[in-house]
Length: 534
Image: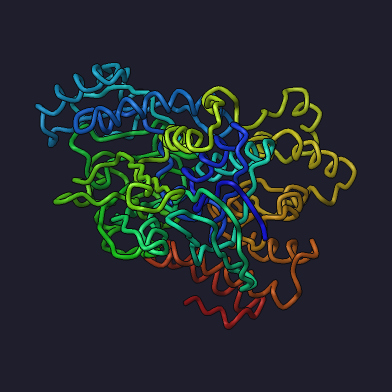
């Protein structure tokens, strides 16, 4: 029987943060995730590294946590953060009284909010609506949730932390009021087996309630769906927030070459519900156009949604529910060794992990202090290594590959590119992914399907949304020897369906023409399932 002292359930930001912290303190820890890493809320959000300004009026404790963690994550996850800065703007239609409360809230919370003249604001953001009446600069940033989470796993592995993806919890064993182990199912093969453990950490986000029910416990979680729109260019140079009470469609976050507009808030029954609807798109566009009046003239890449795991509180739903986090020790309910952590935000994942890890270490008599705020997640690729590799990478691809791969993998890919010029072929032009990088990532033990590679490289997430890289990726993945020929076609279809899901709600204008091009390409050129997109 496999054994671990601590098993963490959930491969989102909080789970991988706990894995890293426990491993660094010397605990024997294993993380299990029923899919791939960060396939839930930790990847389905606007990618904002909060300054705390959004909570400065309503929740100053959360605001303080955000600005402190913002500073820490910039330091330890440098390659995951784009320090673009942020701006809060008040429009003529926004309540003037709120501005004074917000300024005072920022001051009390320790958030540097610098007043801008309108001339400065329009110079920084030329596309802003002329209805802006005041603006402030804040230390917001963009953060790559995929990369940050994967780097936590890599860091944990250096200290013995283990990870099993596509491993679903199906049963919790308990004896005399204590957790003794779990039963899991490999979701790819169907194989079931047991893992012995003495502490079980429920960090399953929106699925926390379902995990708790396996132990006969009740953890009331309200999944709250948020829909977002990705545009194909940077509409803004900075994160732009509306200076009013938090609402739908009032944040624009630039990411690389795109911009994300979000988000909505809708209570749902099932955290698996990531559906979107044209009505939600129209609502976001209508609200967003108040900040950027020419918003509708820009091309929409796709629409996506995720669900926030809000801890249920009497009378509080949607935006009325707290964005803070809760830690539950179920020993108080008669089951020693089981703990749940739920709620919170991506920005505060490291703090959440530290708080629950402190409690776990006390139970295990581990006295090591938390070091996750000081030690970088991964080493950065050196200037010398990048200089040596420059002539082998495509234009604009060097820095992207360096941040995605880290030093060791970057060196391996550089060597392959130098010795095998044919490996310089681009699998994905939008994200500048060479065949050498694709094969490096595809060869990892945790990569089972093309979407696993996507989450680690951004394959298919650029302007063409997989139109041209999908067929190349399926062929290249088959050539790694990890797929049989019959599986390669299924992988291709699955990848295209994933892209289609985000495009279907925006089938209007130019998007219809581009979708027809995709259908024609795969139906007529490759005769794939009649080109049917379901």
